[in-house]
Image 1 (cartoon, rainbow, N blue to C red):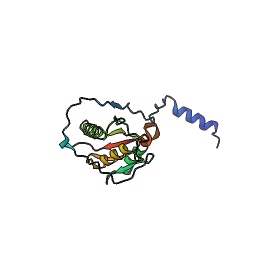
Image 2 (image 1 turned 135 degrees about the vertical axis):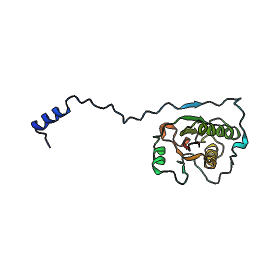
Image 3 (image 1 turned 180 degrees about the vertical axis):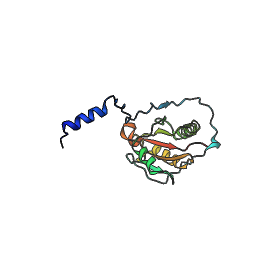
Image 4 (image 1 turned 60 degrees about the vertical axis):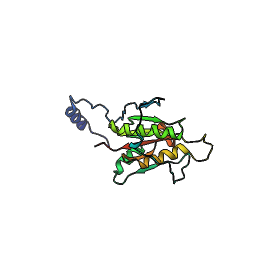
Length: 175
């Protein structure tokens, strides 16, 4: 449908002096903080959180993981799956033993909640180099997250953030 010259003139006169809005549809998340493992970090009270290693589910290298506690709004889970919630901190467990990973993971998750973080990323890897066919670290992190009371939901990342070798984790607000 073509616009008449009269309609175009009316539109131009109506829009005189109007400035276009800045493009606010862009998602700009702050760069996530990198958490480096240190040999001598402050002591962690193991009594604060007990994480069982029992894993009842068979998890594969490329399996997309997704979990949400009852009551989590579908909108938040959808945003988490799409990688649209800003990652506020990272934890990379590559190269850790299971015992070291459990301790570092617990410290990281408790610290993240204490500091009011909403979404963090945990990189567990896919386990391709494991001697067993089971991705051990991925299975452990999956099991640990399901046991933590302050975790609302988690899911595998979009490919640019690590794909099935990492998880977005949505934390409950403290208080």
